[in-house]
Image (cartoon, rainbow, N blue to C red; front, side, top):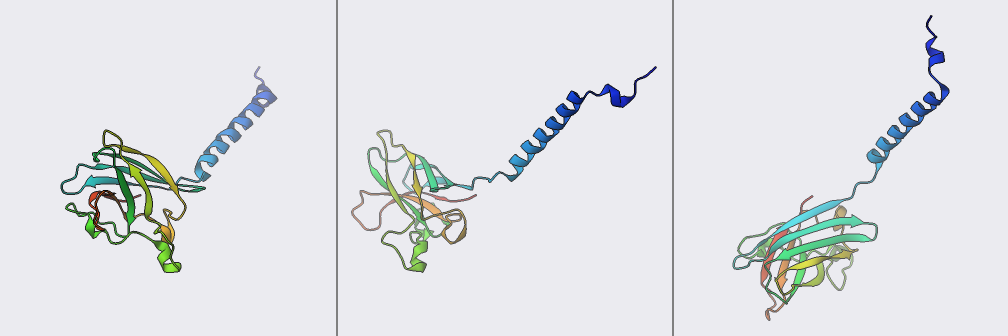
Length: 173
């Protein structure tokens, strides 16, 4: 004689099934509704006569936008300007078609220093520069967005106002 199905399933097993189903549902929803990091990147290529190249990554954080750079081929033991320009154009000869330094505050009263003027970077003895900065004036969305603009590395030792542009890359998502 067979036992009815209801008597074969113990209450402990039912609780186990309910807890398992809830856990899987909760894990799926937390992945689905978790805020995704906003990210962008640029691959910097050398201008004519330069060996500088590298990558720059942008990640929005609660306290600002983290800009992480990894550059090689720079003349060693030197300081460099690290700038974001208005246009996403990187002419292979000189990268001079990228416009002015990006400054969204210029439309709302201006500031002493353009937001696209990042802190200087320094190459080590091997010509590499690795590090990060956190900037609060720039974002990956809206009027202060750097997406579609260019990142340029310039040599600081030039006496002229038109510093030599060593590498350039367009910022993309």
